[in-house]
Length: 80
Length: 154
Image 1 (spheres, each protein chain N blue to C red):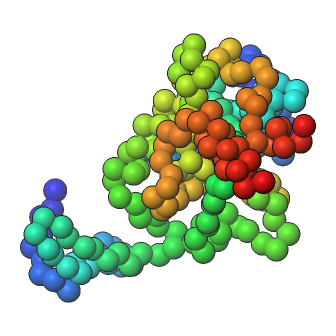
Image 2: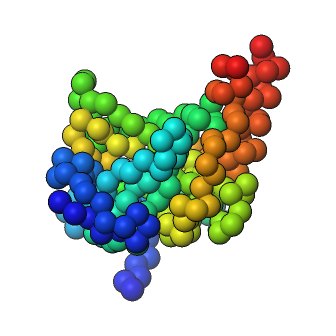
């Protein structure tokens, strides 16, 4: 891993078009600004990992566990 | 063409049935091509079956079926990536997880819906930066919540 020391308002470039700027440091919290092309998705790692994990968990679902009749919800009730 | 799947056996699909996810699913970027399979006649559930991986399929449901006040806000970047134009037909699903043998415990991932541009046959799993939504909403509880709200309002 490359480790760099930066001060507030300083930034790093990743390639030609991604810039990560240190906006604020307050105790243990660091605010970062990210300038990247629209084609690059930027997300917090824990969110990305939670979704990946849920996708894998969801892919374990088997057809025999899917309820045959739809659960009775608001749509059905208001129609009756 | 024939598509072999572990859940549904060998099924016949047309090339035009395939929906391309250029970036794959979140954390599963290698899975880029899928087909939609109806679970059963009259069922609100559908399956997003991988074309590349016979054992990979996600159960889907229309999120507004159980969460009437669900909101999906697409960023300009997402709109661009989904190649949305004026006459695009967009379809939104959420993935459903059913723990083995426990259908009552089924949950939906409202944080990362599957958005499909039916016109362009392309799709994305969109990450919503909305603190109301997480990856495991109990579907039955969501239904009761929105039903109660509708009844107390009416």
